[in-house]
Length: 340
Image (tube, rainbow, N blue to C red; front, side, top):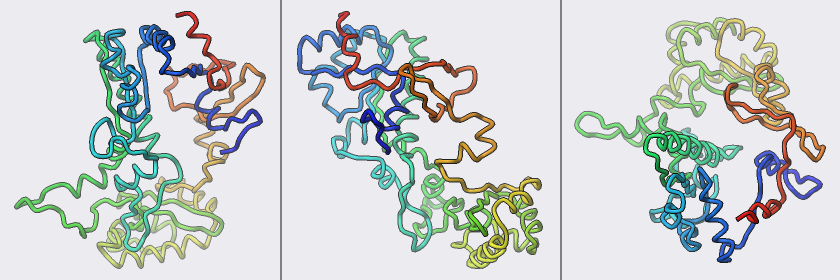
């Protein structure tokens, strides 16, 4: 991540603009007392320490809930507050590995991590947001806060029911699906109609799941569109070796033209396809992303201008001030505790 002139990273600026920063010694009794006064006025407290750390400072939920009975207290950790791995250190790639997200579901293909922190965002931040909002809504009825024990590994595992659930279902006679059985629904690229192909100058994604759309695709690219070909195109090559042959034929055909050329042919026919963009330029190149204004230009109060990724909030919820405080330095707002 690029480092800016003030020593902070662009990611730090993206995530922390408009926030306040207080950095204190939690072992200091005076500071501890001031923090309790601050907590008394809070709706939500989020902590990401290893299990047991907050208790060492008498700031765990049981120690402070009497100070603010309406407080929603969220502990977001790697593996949750209990279990054999609870106190182990971990990062994003480990959650994806242990929950199977890096496994490609294809023979002879090595496990491969995703290129963005899917576990931290999809398995951590988003579940935390949902649980906190749900807890605040529940509080309107109960008039009480609650404690939320969230695990990023739990949240990551919950991202994958499409692959996990079919393999867990019991068949007649209480038999489980054999481990070597081909998945009934695969998104790993082993189905000809659902994978990424190379073109003359780039890549083209096919996301076809319905026979009528694959029939239209075969006709559009000048290939046989018989029922046999359509069935083959929607079947995993692990189930039908002929699907691999069709996959090679499609690849050879798509190499004849550029991505833009194929999009101009397939797009108007309502065939599920898309170009592959580079993540760093997608918001500048993709017409749909540009139309939806997924970037936000922020004028910081220090005069600096930043173009950042906009939070995915629906229009009625978006508050977009003309100016915004830049990301604070560590401890920049310690004076906020002086009022207590």
